[in-house]
Length: 374
Image 1 (spheres, rainbow, N blue to C red):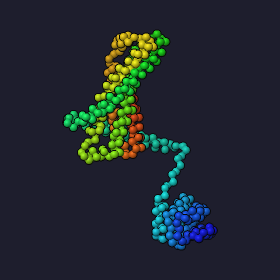
Image 2 (image 1 turned 90 degrees about the horizontal axis):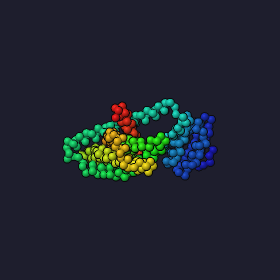
Image 3 (image 1 turned 60 degrees about the horizontal axis):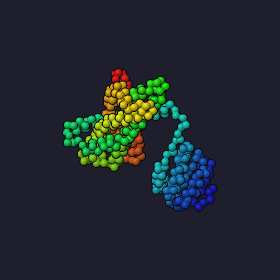
Image 4 (image 1 turned 90 degrees about the vertical axis):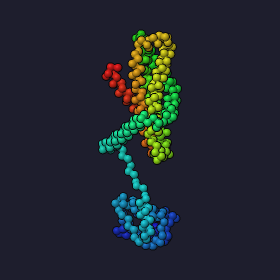
């Protein structure tokens, strides 16, 4: 027995009955819960509400929690004498209770591992298909702009050229200068052992002109510009500006994507050329300091021992890198779902994907040129 004016527990041979009488509200919920908790979940329980004139949501919640616990234990809670309002309230509260989450398993089974791998691959294929679709839209709108020059956004192109190109000159030049310094210092340390210090000029020239200059420039642009494109377009997506543009009959691809990608195509080769010059300057300076190779000797060795083909091999990658970086950045912005968390995640994904794509494409170019003997 539970001493209370409104709650009474009767234990019978085959079942336990709980009788609730009077008006039950928040003040009684703890007593009702205590009375129900004393009854094992595996027992047969009948809740008699014939004498209950009124119950509120808190009492219905206590009943619903006990009912779910008994159902989980394989038993059943039977309610008798409930009014239509009390029965409907209890069912509503029961439906609103959160589902219990299963604790994660300690070890992944083979099935779960394959499922996780499949989801990752399917997501990657879907993103790749969307990116290729965006590339197709860019090429189509670019062709239309060439056919109808009046629709081309020249002002936007100039603005993005300034933001993506001129704004990146200091960091690109500094990075390339330091790379040249490091190459000259490390190369001189190793080549001095064989008395071949003069070949440090060839090492610097070929490394920077053919690979490192444009590759590191593209990586910096990928981190700097791809994130900016994603943030700008994603912010517009969050504010529903892109939907407003479509409503006004303005094509978002022509306005947002074509000028940005084209600006990168125009500016990345120039940035790569600046990186080459800065890298050679840094290498020449360190060679002069470390090895005593004068600038005149460095220039002579550079002209005699380095083919101009290395310059073209490096710069020919720039437009491809530019298109890939621009498309990935813009596509990530279009995939923003409307929350700040989604914007941050897409910005991070754009930078990672752009840098990864640049490195993979550079490796493919290197294999191609090696096979062609260039």
